[in-house]
Image 1 (spheres, rainbow, N blue to C red):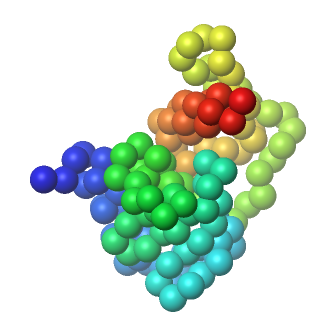
Image 2: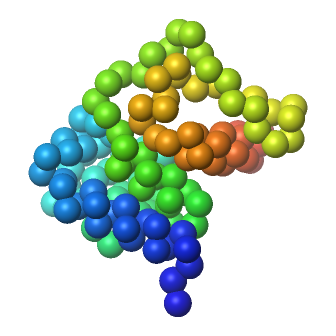
Length: 128
């Protein structure tokens, strides 16, 4: 039985691939297209997105990271990030703050940005 994350990821991938010709994902993500797959970097890892799944470094993503990536791909726009002024998002614990471009909301919904803050913070801590 699929989890809620897997259902949402599948729904997002269906929407992406149902309109993939008009979405220009190579420029919006940016990504390299390899047949039906898009390859790009996410969370500091090699990401491969296809009609059936998303992988990071070859590992299938069926949880929050997969959902974040699918949301990003679904909502990405070709606009470059606006780096000044930066906007902050306070994560939990309150001592952690992630900075985003001031137009980040154009690339992914706000709840997705909150998840990006959480998983980016975890990844930074892992790298230390």
